Image (cartoon, rainbow, N blue to C red; front, side, top):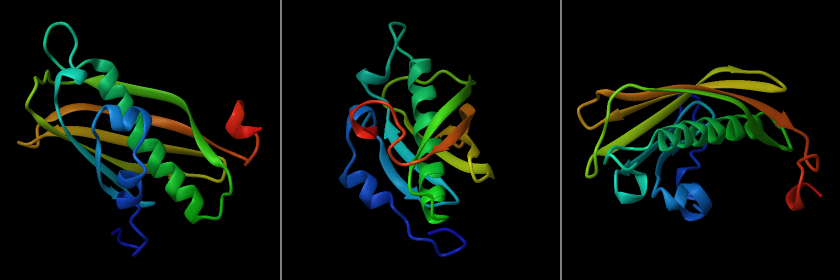
Amino acid sequence: MSADNEQDFAAAFNGGNAGWARAMDLRFLVATPDEVIVEWTVAEQHLQPYGIVHGGVHCGVVETVCSIGAGVAARARGHKGSVVGLENHTSFIRAVRAGTTLRARAVPVTRGRTTHVWEAKITDADDRLVAQGSVRLLCVTEGTMPGPAGT
């Protein structure tokens, strides 16, 4: 629960966990307007050919936790649409192999009316930095997203 006693949506995201987050076996621990925390244990689906976590996994996790945070925060402020990522800048700090449990934590940098910036850090069980990144997101009006969901 956040400092503002906002509702935590982690259980809802775990219950409805689909698509990429499910394929990566992400477990949501916290999902509030002030922070999002996920955890996962590195397995075969996370690895590149050299046996370490693929950089795309780190990018995807950063995108996921930042997007969920921005979406929850925008809804808490009365936004009736969704959020979409505009930029993702992720840096890879430490190589990680299968069997390692990782945790990603995202917090807001700014939460504007139309754009948000969130930053995330991925750490291992010893609290060593593995990757970090930031995502800039756009709050879009309901019904303006391209494709079937926005039509």
